[in-house]
Length: 487
Image (cartoon, rainbow, N blue to C red; front, top):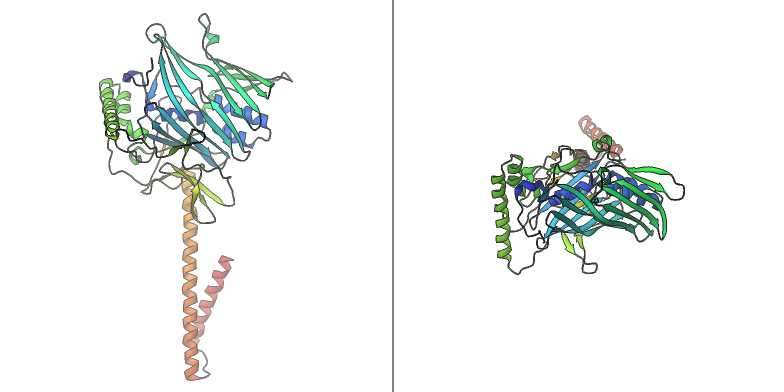
């Protein structure tokens, strides 16, 4: 039985959208920054596996299912990297409702990586158990290495729906493969056997190979320690372990304030349902959820046979995969690139050479503040998606999100990049002011010279008065000072 069209009760809902939940894989995106700097292809794929494992330990309390995104819903956020003074951006959009397909794009151009992909979410009901299948793949690209890693996802399996203890496990075999380097990582998420004990819960095993040569094996628990053992030397190391220190050191997520989000931003879109769930008012939560679902049905009926056109993603006719419209794989040039930021879902780079926004890219920190798009808080219903994004956290292990302030232009950025952009703007304004002053002085000198020339013609060889000499000296000194400043 496919549950994708079934309306679920609100008491089993996690109070955030599925688009938001997909961002949980990037709280340790600094591991990808480290991977991009590795010289060895083998060390790079080990680091990629370490990052992949870091996305599973963050779970809600109890068994909860996130909201099914509404068609046209968007979500965006970023994580600040203190070590590299950069940011990782995340953009997601619900591009189809039946079947439910979510497209996403992640990037940090300064640190040299980006990820794109889409997921078709399927749910299967088997009586006392339920499986949530994430059908799709992601493509991780290291820009400086010209390498692409194709990544698949496990499925979630819930037992004890009708009787027994409810448990959530991950199952299935996944692969992380780089065609260029011929490295392949295989991970097997194992379900607990019928007669298994506590040690057989959340077990994972796997291997890393180059061609047909197995270089290392992996084993452990995907929500705990995972060990890697080198095949040749027999040496064992802890590949991943989400200790309290590791959890507390994860990157901080930056989001747009709720009152600055567009109507189809996830947090604003679901705000009334979320508030009711957090208030433990299931009747109100069910009613608010019904309002959104009815608005979506009405919009679908009004569209009729007209195909929906996503705002931020497009279907590649060659690969038949959804790609981010504003993708830019140019390398980060520290001499040219000033700052990267996002505006209305478009990730862009401000470049030094032109002194203005140039091209689109993917990474560094939300640049100048976002300008107000909305005059009030409207409950959305149907029609077209607007712009903006949001954030919602439900797990107690998650730090409280930081909401960045916004201005009226639709930008939003972290404090570090905001200061960077402001400083640059102040310098440019000062230079412009000095240039204008210099031009005024030059015009005054020319006018004075013309005046003196006319007086010479009429009066012959007349000596300059003291007043004229003083003015001329002041202007010449000012000109020399400005020339010194600009040289």
